[in-house]
Length: 528
Image (cartoon, rainbow, N blue to C red; front, top):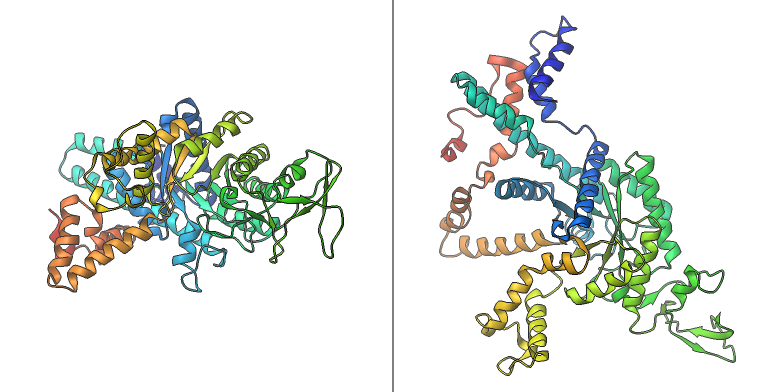
């Protein structure tokens, strides 16, 4: 509906109620436009369609990959989307990522925690709701500015400008985008996963990422000690999430199945198997076993091909996989996940290497031709060192002289101005584009960017402000840059909703409204 049709619609409703004195149809239309999404389910359905369309576009051309950055606060997510609209004019292909790591580290009532699913499970859906509250407020604030500009044009008698602004209102693009939300390993059994997934979806999540680790001893994907579960256990949780989506009427909701098998050498269970070659037998085939003829006290044995085998069991009662089977297990995990309800894959790797990722994806695509990945461009990787070593190895394999470089210390600042460093940086710059084309990566994300940017910017401010620079440390390093770069938050009262409140006061009280945006509001100092 257009802006004018919404005014007419509101006017028709008001016209049937003779005692609604002072209710203005245009004010109602404005408030409705500023509150386009009534519930989290409205958001989930809207954003799920966006992701489905983006996936279809990627299948046609891998240059259409998508990106996101991780968030731990609604304001952070809001500012990312405001910045994206400011710099690129559209949010198309840009999402938000909600990292369980950041929730554990920054939002748990227990205080900072490692990424081991020890934080309160409801803190994640609470953050989804918070993120969308801030994104919806960004819409309301930006539309409010257009409404003010429209009133100004009308007051000045500029009908052409007024029409232009009305067209801008009709074509307005929301800040509300898909959130890829991390449910860890499901926080319990399949029923617990289903109940929590419903909370995610009701808060607005259209895409839920779940991993194949055990839920009671889950580890960060880039730490040691990871333990996986048999495929049937993981598939049950994928189904639980799908049922949650369908129960709530978000049929286009997406599931990202994450495998941690590349770095996980342990399993808590021997999979149940009915016959040779079934899904359980395929999982058990990777167990590190030895053939036995006599049974020892407490032995756990399995039978395969007429032989009696003893799986290697640790004092922790965990079973060990054979060394070097990680990639094979990742491929099998991925195929079974996509065949049983998952829409996208996440393969957690120990380094950003297109050849390694692409090799696994090509094997998966032999069975599932349109398999697509979500990939963690993780801050846990030393990107500088990894890519300098990749260039070093490529040069060495090509017979190029690398005697001027020590591979073990390529991170050194001594190499920053070298040709090798420049080539490595170029590979980093094009990594997402290259990996989208060569490794089937539909969505690139950075899990913890604002954790690191907050630490870096705070360190720089503290060094200046508490040092010789004093107040100039803040003014030069923060406020002046906000003004020069057009950062909306320099008017922090406006960003927090002060002008929105003034608009509402005027709707409610007319000329009697006591508004905050008068001549003595210090935000007027930033009008230029």
